[in-house]
Image 1: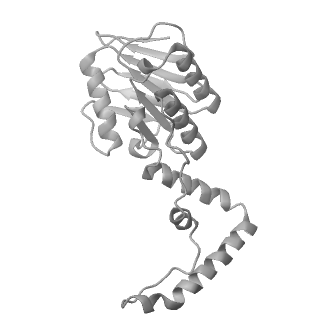
Image 2 (image 1 turned 90 degrees about the vertical axis):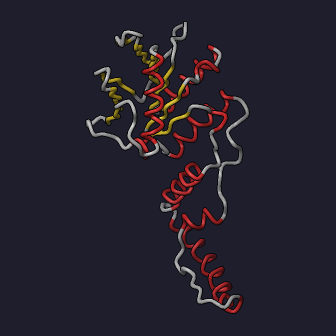
Image 3 (image 1 turned 180 degrees about the vertical axis):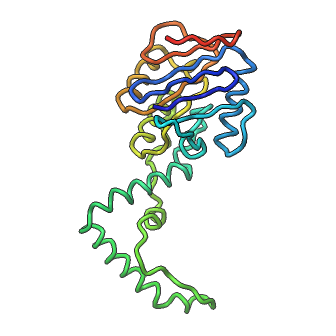
Length: 231
């Protein structure tokens, strides 16, 4: 579980793995400050609205490393450096458990190394060197391994893809989605919430208005008088 503390409200908002959390902030000024602060904190700056995230051991999280904030799913790049690096890191972890395959890769790499090293310095008048040891991360980067598609065409498809990628790559501890529920039908939102629950990832929706209907999420409302209601 992760807890969000908004100090001006003096309240801890719980974000759990088995159910998405929706935080509605009706006060426009507070909503703007919170979103601005999330963006600032994610980029390593001090937020205009003091807020913090804590893990289950009450340890403050480094949001730049542990969260991803999405304000426009259509603009999220599934081929970005962050996603591609996460793919390569996960593959490195997986391949460590296959020593026979690693041995074969090392043989191929050594052959490639031998061929290149033999005439490398003949091609350019500089002292160049090659790492003779196989580095899986560099190998995957060299092979340009990335997702086959860039997340889908619709907002709903891209949100589903984003949840799948974060889960499969153990990319971030927390996904924060800002004002995305307005783009989804009731059926799409219900399916998205179900997918979040099944995959057990921690997701926080931040919205500026309450959506009618009953959905499977933990709900908080901060009204215009800064009163907090939980349902």
